Length: 425
Image 1 (tube, helix red, strand yellow):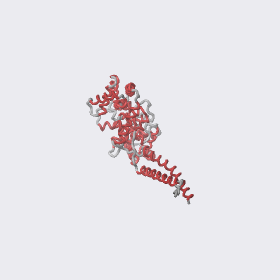
Image 2: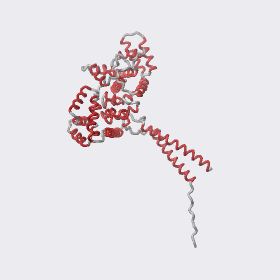
Image 3: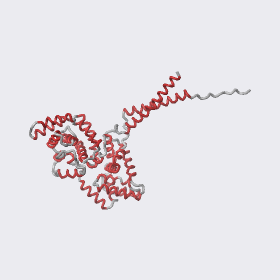
Image 4: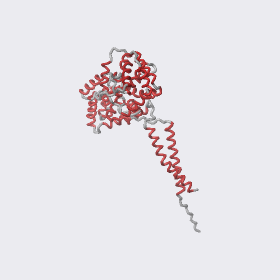
């Protein structure tokens, strides 16, 4: 009986030793991988991420106080040379973390005297005063040339005339934004302006026909444009925010600033919303017969509309909401910078959390630290039912292991009994 009991205890002990690390690894992966993150970050996660960003900016600067100013000066000038206003402004806002204590006290005193509503604007203005005059003039010039960067670029949404997948590598998102300002009339009404930004269904019909023929038409930009046009044309389609997100995605795609992983992820999302096996036959039928231009365009529009998978579109909209928030918190070019290193939906939430916590400082951080900046986002732990069950299982396994250890010790270790010596008479 003792041998059988000992054998069972050994089996249980070894099984628990194998099982507990597996449960612990799964629990940690679920807690910190980002899969269980909420679509809307909590106040606690924003505050923690902001503190992480402060520490990171402080670590970027040299330790020697005399070198801090030169380093900060050079890094702001570098971004202005690159015409990246958002990143330059981000480093201006990070001045309290990157400069020495005396300079920080001066900044705080100067910012309190600036008559601007937002604290970030006051800090940026005070930090700009600490830079040489030529840097300040360069910043103002870069800001003026950037124009209204919070407005989605026209070339981001409007379909290219050639519709090719290959975009010039030297074309930046900022250049695309500048081109868009020329293509849109300043006297257009808001609805007309949006119509020009999205292109027309006639453009979509032409590029759809070329896609069917096997020409080099990018299906990603084609589907993004189609969904944006349908959203602008119907009350039950994409919202204004989703249209802005589509603009950011298309700009990033044109400028070749999306990772292969995120490109594949986005392609899968778009294929779920507009399945190829449904869309292609619908377009072939719509474009198969000769018809007038207006009839042809209506057929193509209906083909896209009828091919939409509502469930897939809903999943896509969750990502579009994150991207739209990036654009709202920063700008269209800045949002492109933030998603440049994104690989999946978890990274997208991290980028959104960075923007929530730091605004333009998040852009500066991504420019400086690359994909490592996304790991600074502390999203916290969302206690889902599955995660709680795993933690409870890990606790129960630990208690069972402790019980087996105590039982084994008591069975195998015999303490010597104390001998009682007879008392002398």
